[in-house]
Image (cartoon, rainbow, N blue to C red):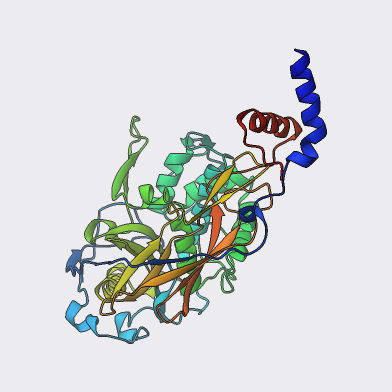
Length: 452
């Protein structure tokens, strides 16, 4: 007992000498490491002709199958598209006011038409509302099982709706079904009031999110997209918003479903049919959001994925739902027929490990904050790439999402082609005094102490 007491006292006195400075891998000097990797990526081509009966009734999207206009969708021919180098060829979407085709992984624009023109976007506005709802879920502020009570204001909304009655209770999950599939205005306002107290305050949250995304041509006056002066966005901004929404993968569990039910175990069973017909008729389509008002005409943010390539197609200002669907598919066809994506590193790929001293973890793994991918023409050869890994910050504490360095991708000519932030795979904190004392004693007993 006496020896143990003396050992503890000796340890306390010698801690300043025993605890060495953080190792070379744990300082703030830039560390560089070159890695060479070559991956083969083959994307299968597939061109599909689609016939879709699509109708929107009233002033907004309807959620029934009582369709009274038939539209035959003529997809673009793959042979004609293969060698088309002009990404601004407006013949792809001649009827749209504006449009964009974007690669979801890299954010690169493949096609554009009047991409920054400020126009009404109808219910595509609801994508920002969906982002906020999903963030609230992920942050633990609300749960899918929470009960939302519809106010008179929410139940009184016109246009697309799930016919909420004042005082009706519905889960957050069912409300999200109504927003995602039926573009329900009443469900959107009910969720806005549930999260922020009032629609006005929720719209302030939406505009704050728009600013965070760095968008210059978007401003909202309401959360539903109903026509209102001063409520606008652009094709490019809508593509960025869609890309942000897709980062919350849960959205696809709602947007990809063609039909479902609400109030299923009641006498008031309600049939939901997705206003986005592409999820049923276009290969790989699993979202994302339709829109229709008098001012906006017919709009669509469509997304589809084939192999590793996910595309986002935006069309605004179409004359009817048939043309909207057809021109959206023309954009998607153009992308899938002409482009391929090579995923170099995913967010699960550990690119480096660094040692830490006086930390809750002795080693920490570094991964890209976002997937690293190269978008190229299908005709382009597969290239070799090297990686420079630079660690610029290891100051404790570190949290998942914190920037700790960068990974720079270079081609065979040593030109930088990509740069991505590196983050950590777990939260790491400093050891407190007792934890540091315990670690010191343990190291002494097992002979891990370095007295130099």
